[in-house]
Length: 161
Image 1 (cartoon, rainbow, N blue to C red):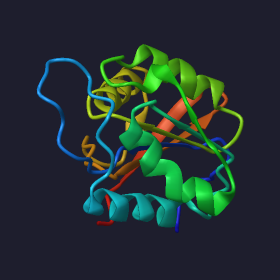
Image 2: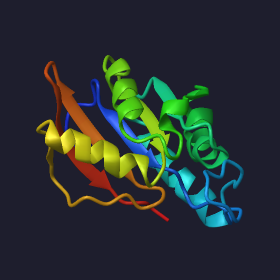
Image 3: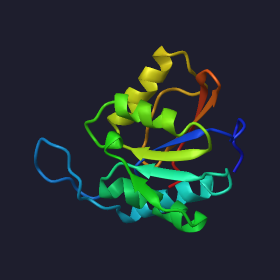
């Protein structure tokens, strides 16, 4: 896969793949696993990121996020670490802290449709330049590059399935 900028220190922000039906309630729903389409999207994430030198995989503890990174983890021989800061409903502060902790090597984080736009919005306020319009489809990836000062630019990769 061609990556538009040097992979050193890149952060790959993945929206979890398509998951099963949520339970009926107002709070976060941790249980749904991936659908057949979601499994194909997860394989697409693997195919797009398997050659970029990723050394760490971190996901929301929700099953759909862990399952989204599972094919990539298996291919790379890595484990998926979970982090509550990426959980649904947590906002951008924790995700931004985690992103800073992962700054020394290419890493992947997988989160939700509420956390990712908040994170991107926070990065825009800090000066990141995004090549593409804001969007975060299930199974998609934002490639965020940084320099010594912080995140500088971002590029969107749509889902492959």
